[in-house]
Length: 630
Image (cartoon, rainbow, N blue to C red; front, top):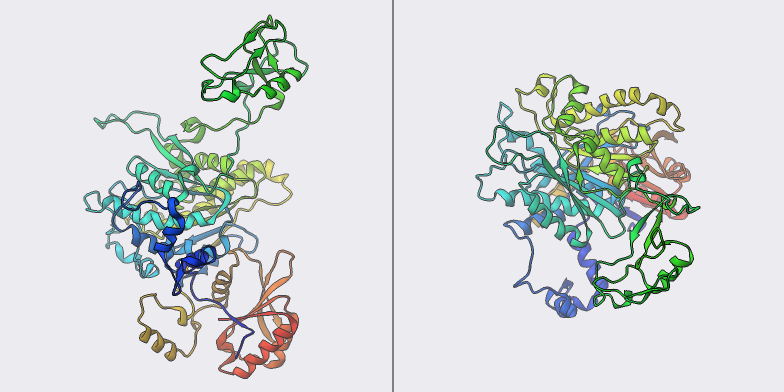
């Protein structure tokens, strides 16, 4: 009846179905009766399929359910929280309060393959850490009931005790679906940095090998978090934590460090080469002549005519490369020119930056004491335990992001990544954009944070971002005054919520008869309590728009319309979201005339008038406008 109508889906994509569709396209012969025939798929893969009876991998109780948690669609949405935002109309940064598993699902539609760098500092599973409770059928309900998981004194009732029978499994079940969803968000040349200590570093390494592929392991950075010994233990004093780095693919290239005077001092010019200082690189290869026969040939010194054959080591360059280097004067045969094997001249003028190392001293990346000072300096007291130092996150950003990159932290904690990105942008003139996600985990009632008026960690995170702005603008006022564009020191705040549409407010385990009864009993699909702004946000997310779209509200023939600007500054989407005011045909005609590409209208706005809906569909078709309903 309404072929021209497009209905906005109520849930995020069902990843099981998408995977099956992709497999069906690639190998249609593996499809039988609308399902993937796994045995046939194994036959087609032949020797490429692993023997499931004996194979290496990381296995734990609940792994299949954890995978299903990532694949389960969600009807959850995000609600604008303008009261807790800063510079809503101009900022490109986002802070989301909510369970990160649900939020990561919501972000998939628009942010898939768009995030250059992810940093997370998840719970370390030390026996006292809270491990996010995942109800695999009702993940959103698990979040909405979160505040019931603490007693009146603020003590957590769901900590993952090291006495629990599934101590490691519980932690892996939390991490697995989140990392799977996070990987989807990375750009092809993106990378993820994960802070962890010794408790779960081994399991996390194996988990990431499986999730990202062993070939995409980049580094296990040891960060010197402290520089003093502890006299209160008979065991080893732990002075480092791990920072695991995995890339999305082989396209990732780490940013090099600026050169230092110490590094440049290693260059000299003993032969007065007009190209300037250089240092010698060995012409010997670690491999033997037997291992690299193509790099084994007679080496002739042009000054003496002496011939040298490779002995225990082959040459580093091929014979043609040797001849080219000799012609270009890039081989050094010693002070008297009689060496049997030359050095290769590496000129300072051609030198690249310095490659980063996998040990970050506290003098380079800060320490835990510095992290505490970073926060206490802003708040005048210790409102957060063991925050990461801003310098550590600056180093991560310097090594893995560009000046305009989009970065993500879905275990935001006190908001260090947002603070670090803002500070680095101030220093280098960048415009990095940050998305942070934090569970509204209650702070203990006896804590300094509670005494200061904060009730959740998310409250602390947002306030830190506000206060950090003043400090950064004061410390870097000279640099900021010279910027062409002002520093983005704001953020749009959102809160995770159940859908605003009653017709979508169902979990996947509802029986078919119950579903039918629910749909029949509906009178209005949109929640009367929901603001038009909240409805628009949900519809935009489900249509694949970002969380920082420029939206204007204006009048079109007596209708209040929300216009969403596209990259060219035109209103690529117009939305009418008042389900209590039925538009006239003339008003709808004016709306279609004003539209550039898309119109979104609530189903309830027609008040059951199918003829009006049909007329709108025909008007849109005649003008080439996409019509979407919800």
